[in-house]
Amino acid sequence: PPNPTEKIKQPLKLLLWTLIGCTKTFLLSGFVSGVTDGFSFQSAVSSKINQIFYLLMISSVSTSMTSSVWLNFFYYSQIVPAHSALFIWIKNNVKSIIYGFWITERIYCLFDFTSMFLRFTDFDLLLIRNNFTMVDDMPENNFYKEMFWIVFYTLRAHFVFCLCVMVMSSGSTVLYLCGHMRHMAANGQPASSPRFRNQVRVTVTGLLQGVLYVFSASWIIYSFFPKNDLYIDFTMIDSTVIMSYMSATLFNLGAGQAVFRQRAEHIWLRAAHCFKAPQVQQTDQGA
Image 1 (cartoon, rainbow, N blue to C red):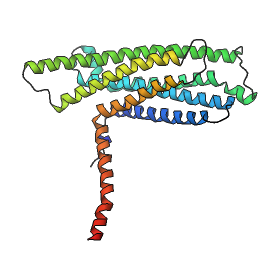
Image 2 (cartoon, rainbow, N blue to C red):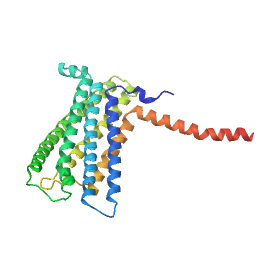
Image 3 (cartoon, helix red, strand yellow):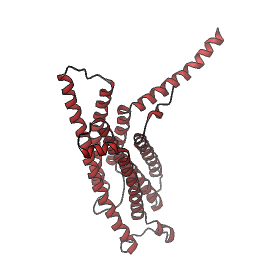
């Protein structure tokens, strides 16, 4: 049978693979940081290495969250009919809009990671002096600190903006589908068409993703960026919250995307066929 992933079109393909890539990066970074934490010795160098992988984990979670927002926005533009001139323009240019925000967010994410890396590692001091004394009075360190706070408040504003987009897109989709269901019930039309069921499934998973986004964004802002201590570390609660979000995101992808269900079914059938083939050969040889 054909590969189900060939049916994915842009920008849906870009957003889905971004979510998958972020999940892989998060799991790999968490594994490496867990291995280094398991060492019996804890030096300043290993602590800095752990912080780098923590930064990768935070960046991957942030990218995953914003990508899920634009995924909801894309489905909103495909499900809800356009009436106003603004929405007609958005619907006709949704691919360019998502591409523009995606590229801008990736540039910002790189700047975000760089600023936090310079702020938390003091890597030049590590290489030149080979000591780990705090140097908060150095001009370079003050510059990194100021740059970090600029990035932090920009990140918080970006989360609020994405939250508004998530609430608007999910809420509008729910209102449209509820009105559409009432219209179908009034006209005696069945609400069992495959297209309508797919729209409902995508909307439900989108609402769940929105709730997860609100909770996870609030927790990241509160937990990972305290006001007085700029040291980054993951507690057990932090890991539980983030792992719950990433796991629920994967569940939503599987429940809301027919492509992933078809792909899983395709892999299962191929595995079953490979398992049955040796048994058939043994039966033929015995006969």
